Length: 413
Image (cartoon, rainbow, N blue to C red; front, side, top):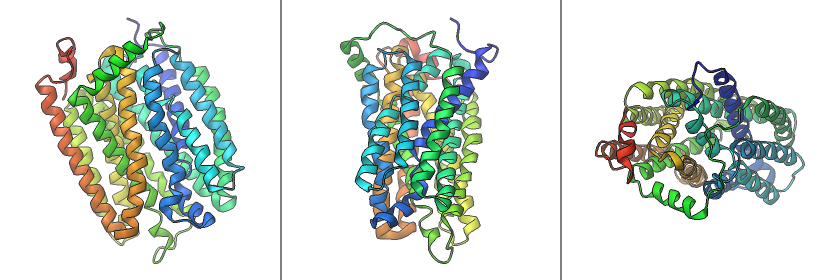
């Protein structure tokens, strides 16, 4: 089987393409996050309402990932990813002309729905095309594109919103992403291991049920829910107290706080590679502990200490997501990897949408300390789920067909 390995010519350019695709998606998806406070002020609504400009996109992404999971076996992987990325870039440009909050939320919903064609397909592509020995490393590179894309989108929009309007800043980001879409199309090789035969609904439904019948996979999906819900919630509202005394930071300076995403670029790759040689459950548990520790540190009144805590939290998140998402691909049935990836990302983005919005209420009712306590408890639940996944894999409780995959599934648990 001609899998992509570090020795193959396609290895580097495929990594670059996947990195760019991940970059584009996350830059577009989270482009309104750094200007939630500005949107709230412009439309005279509370931050929780303004955050719907983000939650609508992530919520639509989660919903339509189900559709993708049922149709992923019917269409060419590369073409679906290209359609998702190009259409999203055009919608970001469209946002530049919107001056109405309900319309903004509607456009962002459509954008999230279209972006559903990228993440699970990309993860399925990785699991199908790359040598299994480097999966952790490759997904680490892919997730590092998440961090840099998220950073660039937030930084560009946050900084330019002081010089221009937030709408114009998002439109300029869309133009940049459109250029990178061209590079993605050129660099990404076509799938060699994708079954091009149109999958039947019966087969797809059976594969979907196969994945949700696995307790270990369901618990990993819930870990994804917790990781992303915690992460988005903290970043949605971290800048809001900093706009007020005693900090009085500008929108540009708050935008530069997202430079912390760079630690995620290192964390996702390093933790992914570490999980290839050690315990995946141990690495995820360590990452969740780091997230909790970082949250506690953010309660300090000193700005430098707060930012250090946010960096520690960010390091843990990207590492945990990288390892959890790669573990899903390993535990899933080979034929149903797209469905398992879609389900993981479904929970992942539902966490972003639900916890991200509810977190605004905790901030409003109990302040930053109350929000930190709530998210820390959520991460603690994630640690418990990680322990249960480890026990299930040790006991071979993954799938009906575990005899064929037990040696792979239990490796480095």
